[in-house]
Length: 380
Image (cartoon, rainbow, N blue to C red; front, side):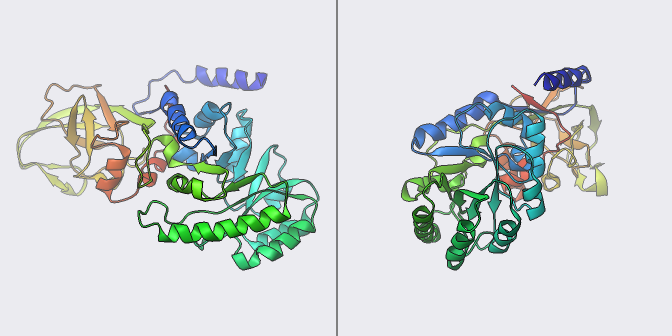
């Protein structure tokens, strides 16, 4: 622990410059979102999902916020992510939900780590070779047909587990395929299959600790399942993916940059690569030092917005690798160094993550996880 403090102190010595692009993550809003779910569903334990750099919010900073909270465990995608957290002093239990190679599971020396077993073949290989205590969660395919043992393979999996004392079945899990769809027929068919499967495992493993099928959108169904844990992903970060809008969630992330140049350009002139935008009037055009490398989706070219004060300024021309041009004619007093909001933490703004996704005709997950890991996450 002392070494970690020394390393952080050394790191802070090199953080002397003021970056042109800043990613702010609100600790207050993150914890408020978690508590919104805990209050609404008091019978559930929550497992925050921090895979993919905590949905773009910063793996280590978000883990540091949650490390002492009342949670079941942290959900990661890979052993690599787990190593990063342990190397940064995170003590929480971890479930790796992605597919981990059997060799890596068997060689793992990290403490308080559980692995998701995503298929019968993987289970068989690990069972044949395991010689030390290894905690696992067995995934059941209830209809998504992506990962998990099939219902007809349950008996075989139980036989394998009972024959190996090194494998500790800590949990069983599954995943909703269509929980954000108001037509819940398919989700209910998954629930029926899930309940039957859970009952079989409960009868065979009395010490089974965790049962989880619900993602953020599927938490709505929690009272209708045998689950005692919900994997809280996008909702933790203030995005309500459920068709039931019953929680007061607040987006956690905001990206800010600055004006790096201002020019007055005559009508009829072009802006940016491929002359993709022609000015219809005399305009004031500003550049902002942020582009698709930093996470501005290129599909926002000529149709997205950045925000200056209370004014939404349209993106003009192609989004470049590290530069985006905006029309600031409506805010003519804007000058070099003025603040620009790239992604707003107000869900109603044109440049909120959700509205950016709609403009780019994609999903909000993609917008968030494409925020460059090179950008420093600043906890506020």
